[in-house]
Image 1 (spheres, one colour):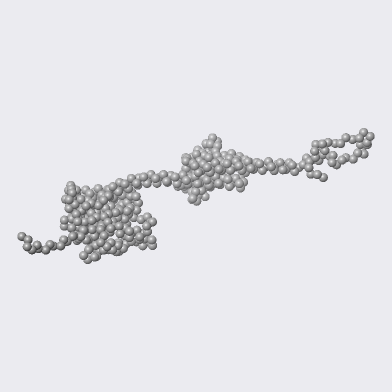
Image 2 (tube, rainbow, N blue to C red; image 1 turned 180 degrees about the vertical axis):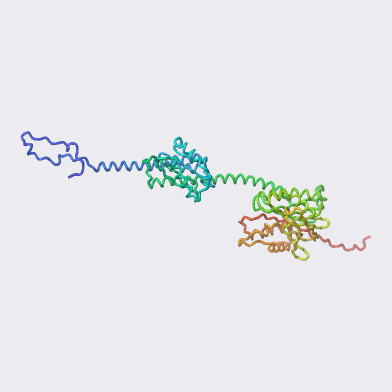
Length: 490
């Protein structure tokens, strides 16, 4: 028998003959209409089911795609979170959705509470916002916070089905996403769980992006401030070394941050002199270091510079200048809980006399040309700002032609190498000795020392502390040969 459904003509009964006995007529099996085929109804139902699933998948895919697009391009967190609540409810065909998010410190982020539909959930949002932060922060763990919040939401929503999942960013609890419907209106299937968890994960990414953007904007503002501070500080440090008769000078400060706490200066003790008289006058050479780094150290350095320049004009000896500076800066440094190391010296080009006093700074090194040895210049004294009545010693020596004097900060000797070992004063002494013996000038010595330091630290590594060097080299005297007596001249 053919499986094809019979035609309308085949299903019609055949006419009976007039003389025939109706009871004798046998029915034709081919002429009997079969019942409606059951497989046709099953196939149609299956096709309808598949079409419905396909439409649902397309709809869900479009909803998730719209949320993903919003995540890639959003500039307003509130608008994005509004979309989160709406998409969550539609994905699982729930009556509504509620999104509760926290600040990074665990406080309720009330400005970002979202719910859908907003009209129906307005009272719910007000009740959630009224939850005291102390109740959340009093919980012993994130699990306890989740339990407290789940119980509150279930109580506020009343006789409805509520399902929730956590919003997590960097393994930290950042909120809860809830969907809810009437008692029989929501099937919490595995597919629905995956969809809601995906929405919650995208929400966590959005919250983390918002924090990163806020940090970036904060850092940009700080960078602009630091750039301004670095420009001001660069203007306060000497942009070039002065001309002092009989010596060569070279200096460089390399801050670890944009604004540093190292300080060096060249200050004429009689600034009213001009020209050659200024070059021949006494000059103060200063090297200091404010304990700490960054903006606070830079501000204190700027304050100290103004005080010191005013003190230099008094013409006092180095020990008296440090004593007075310590008293002037005592109150300001006490409030900042910082101290300053400072080496102060003055040099008279006419006599090559160097006088100096030290407030616990790294003692400068001096290379003596005649002996070829490196010595340390030091004098007793406490940190600036430590005690108001501190006393300071004073030393002096005469520099000879070819001698080299090196001022430096502890950012040089304490610079860590690739193995963690410090540069130390011993390496600096050897590097200074080698540079001086090579016969180069002050700038050449400075370049050699920084190159040696860079090789030790590593060219691509950021220094941990500010590093400053000042090199003073006494020019070697040119001895003209004596002229023989001109015999026969009258």
